[in-house]
Amino acid sequence: MGDRNDRVPIMTRRTRRTTICATPTGANSKQANGSAGEKTSSQPSHSNRKVKEEKRVNEPVTTPRKERNKTSEGFSCHVLQESLLSSASGYSNYRGILNWCVVMLVLCNARLFLENLIKYGILVDPIQVVSLFLKDPYSWPASCLIIVSNVFIMAALYTERRLSVGTISETTGTFLYLVNLTTLLFFPSATVLMLTSITPVGGAFALCVYTILFMKLYSYKDVNMWCREIRHTKARTLTRSHSCPSVAQSNGSAVHTHVSYPGNLTHRDIYYFVFAPTLCYELNFPRSPRIRKSFLLRRLFEMLFFIQLLIGLVQQWMVPTIQNSMKPFQDMDFSRMIERMLKLAVPNHLIWLIFFYWFFHSSMNFVAELMRFGDREFYQDWWNSETVTYFWSNWNIPVHKWCLRHFYKPLMRRGVNKWIAQTAIFLVSAFFHEYLVSVPLKMFRLWAFMGMMSQIPLAWFVGRFLRGNYGNAAVWISLIIGQPIAVLMYVHDFYVLHYVSQS
Image (cartoon, rainbow, N blue to C red; front, side):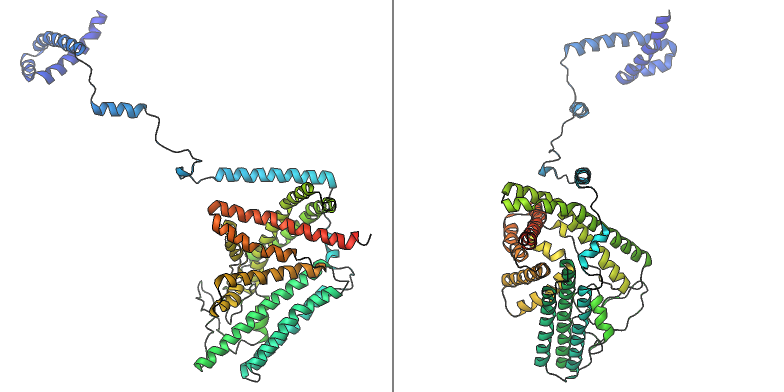
């Protein structure tokens, strides 16, 4: 009885569906007869169901197309696609791999640092740095040499004042500038070479100051000459030099009085330019509205921290590696020489990167904030360089602007070929690189000069045959490998000249 009661509702529901869908007359008779009609209609529906089941067994099975598609989509797990590491996939999110590289770099350098400590002990000595600048604590030749540079600054200022009022001619002014700038280069180098009390580090620092001053005064000469040419052409008072674009004031900054020629020929103006973090002179520099004390303190902290880090890395890591590299060079053991060079490449490149951040970001931003100098573009994305020329144009923006404004464009205006003008820039850069290395070391080997000139064929090769990531990798390899080669060459020659020959 229980089974029968359970089956009756099911039979009734199936009967109703069959009746409604198959014969509407059955539905009318069910409504007229009530429950009796339900009993009457149950028997024919049962027989109809048997007939349909027999037909379903005998007929072939056919599935509708929509149902087949739904079924295939529900069980499908494959799609036409490329692997992620294939270039055709278009996948570019490798942040996890970059983090892995950073972790591996930290671990590898930590192992090297630990190995260095176990082998040599702690070699960091901040007091020893003082001896690099001073041999005699009562004699400061490099500092005295820097103080003397004020003579050349005053010579440039008073020459411009005489030119502005027409006391001397342009030819005389050009001759005076030629004497002043030539002496500016040769006087410090002769002093460094003749004085035995000046150290290589102190001499290099003094020569860097004089080189920067040479480029600044050359720009000072050119801009004032352009102002005189415009004044003579238009024969009226200029509100601004055409070489100095106007700067829009924003963020509530105070409106600065714009200086016009010859009102810029003052001590305050020229010394602001001398200390400003730029090599290109303008009558009216862009100025920031105020000094941000928090920004200034952050840059000062970075300067103090990174200079100590640089000194520690040089003493602890580079000096022992360089000292151990002398014997393979003396024995001309090429395999050991290559091994020493590759071992030196890691600390040298790390120190170079830290120096870049310390100088171009921390130090120059500190000076710019202190002087409210508005143009803070000291570097661009040189790390993405795909060509050698792009790297040299973007890693040192102040020098690049000076070369472009005062050297490259004047040559192009005179009809010089573009390739010849670029080669001339590399020649000038090679000269100053050798000037800043050979003179303080008091030996001339031309390694820095040849290293810079080798950038010309390298730039042609990378630009012609390498593109994209391959070009970027070539630029990084030249930076990582090229510098240690020059360092080892100079250290070896300095060691042979000063130690081997004396012993």
